[in-house]
Image 1 (cartoon, rainbow, N blue to C red):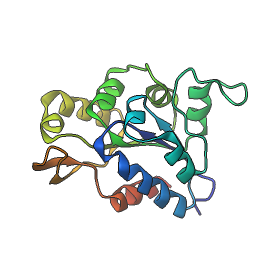
Image 2 (cartoon, rainbow, N blue to C red; image 1 turned 90 degrees about the vertical axis):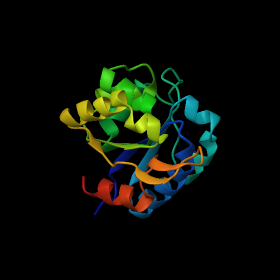
Image 3 (spheres, rainbow, N blue to C red; image 1 turned 60 degrees about the horizontal axis):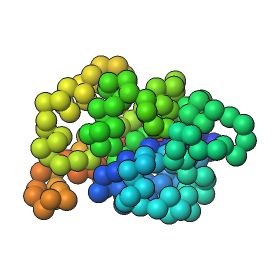
Image 4 (cartoon, rainbow, N blue to C red; image 1 turned 30 degrees about the vertical axis):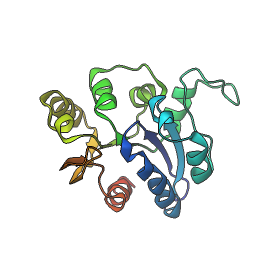
Length: 179
């Protein structure tokens, strides 16, 4: 049923990045084709080769990387997408998208795609509850961008609070709703 559906998985620099590995594995089990786009900051937390091995596809990283064939990377990826899923999504990426800033590969794809966008925030509770972050989320929702909200659990700082990436199964379930 889902075979051949293309998901662009945006991976940003949250400590929850390790869950991206499980998200890829679960999406592949559901017969999605997963193409990973990492932010430059995400590479500080996980190697692209890990995500490439799990997705069995090239991992895209830089806006100006040399393509394998002549193509405009962000446009071809945006057109290829049946869904753009960003998990984990930092306050930074949410703010950039809400402001229309397209200064990296992932934000350019979001700007250029006609596919639905599903964002899964993961950050410290204070960052998540910040009025600016909340205003950015509300703005994006009003523009038709979808969210899987974070959950309350132990944060990287050691405190219990809202901001942890949603459970992988919840993300997969919400992803499948688009198909």
